[in-house]
Image (cartoon, rainbow, N blue to C red):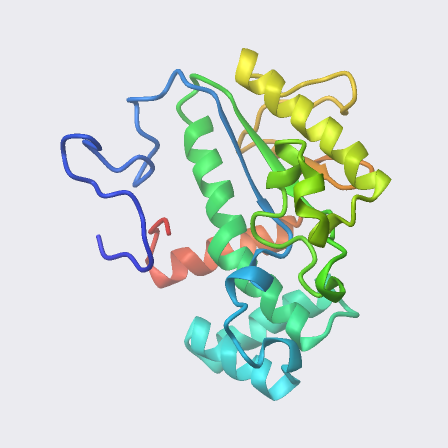
Length: 238
């Protein structure tokens, strides 16, 4: 399988098979999984893009067309994102499209395949807390949840400014990760009921100042990218 970037090497020995392609491996079928993504992964992953924060409509359309391969497909992508985020800027649209296509839908695919084994549970989260450093332009960037999970936001002052609400969220998230490490279940008394993920319900914990549970959040976007994947005949995990 051809991959870009970096990834574990399927060597037939240490990693004897692909862990999630075309289905989740049975090797770890009895191991619970906690998986998720961040709302604005792309602001960090695209930071070397000199034009990212000055993108205009023409530049956005050109990028979307290059990403999906045709004007018709670009129109479909832009239509659905403009309906979902009617007040967004071209930069916001490109970050969301990149994030959803490369990170969020892939996380959901892995969770779906793990859940399909009907063995150990898988729990899905979505980190939506907008960081406040760097002028706020990076929002809920890639890896932004890490200081909250490990309850060390004081070491990420540039992103959190040690805000009281950041510490409150860190208390809740770190407790959930500790509970998961201990028992395989991230449920705590300070969070809404967080049930396991499945293709039927797609239960997702949204982490923000007021954590909440949603079933199949952003359903229209998920279905669009799944259909686009099928249309292109890809099916690869990235």
